[in-house]
Length: 430
Image (cartoon, rainbow, N blue to C red; front, side, top):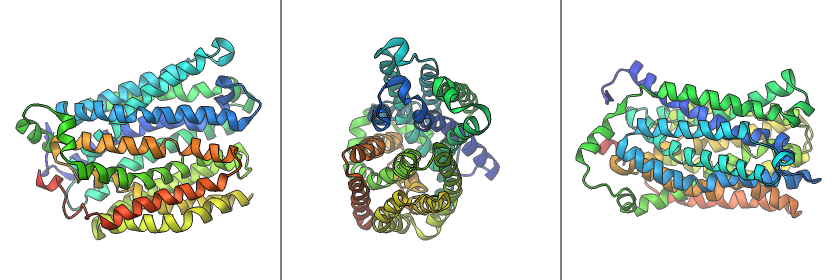
């Protein structure tokens, strides 16, 4: 049955839960690669230089993002033709296969360069999955939300996205502190989280099987003519450009302070792996809790003021925060600095999904959100870790700090001149 605007609060929350838990599982599967790369990098890329090993694993992490536009195109079109629920189920299946492949992948010592080739193939499969997951999830949550609290409801997309990162970080923390030794993690323990991820993905598939379809999709499908998804999306060129522009700085900041941060704290700040993991875990939890608050704030004051707040603060404080992190050896200070950065980034992450969904009509909404977003994330977010390590390897790490600042400023210019989507929402016009 479709879920329409008159649905009860309980049923609406149930649908949000069903859509969100699967999203959390997918992001756990994707991010666990980055959190455990400190341990398995040498298994696939033998080298005496730890930075070079991390650069190789970071490059494969980035490759998973480079196929996300393809996944966004395929899965977004599928979601607009066959439904949000069908696309969400397919994406979690692909993620399951990718995690299982990594869990049983041979090492370089076993299979030579075949091993990293298999690793690349698995990450590409996961990238295809996430390319469509974001667009379908953002569209689904936006369409089932009430107009008054749409920012609040859709903020749960990043609650579960961050929750996936947090779960990956907690898994690493649990294995480090309670279950396995460092040598065991290096030798075989890094496979455990990928096995867990494959099993969780199956659970996500089970949860999504009974999700209600949205009324907006049902109405749009009834009115659809010949299916030309890409051409129909490109008829909204201004909106496509807006998605890319408003995503650029936010996604780079997000991946800098979440995915890259554990390696940054070890490789640049000189903290231990265990301490870096603990800092990342605690800061991710606080960051996750902030999302609904900022989403609710956007319902009260509008989307544009919140985005501008992120743009201004990010432009002013990125270089000071990252510079201070390289100069502190105190874990508490490091945590406070990371937390301050994530408070700023919340101005983007909590509401970016709803802003994008509000730009497009229902017939091309999933594709319109997924494809341009995936392009921006591939260019800026997925490469954050690799670019940061490359600047460090070249002896110019501070250049990366200015690169992040410049991208945030570019997005700030977009926020300053765009209309507030809360007041011009296409969702309310469906």
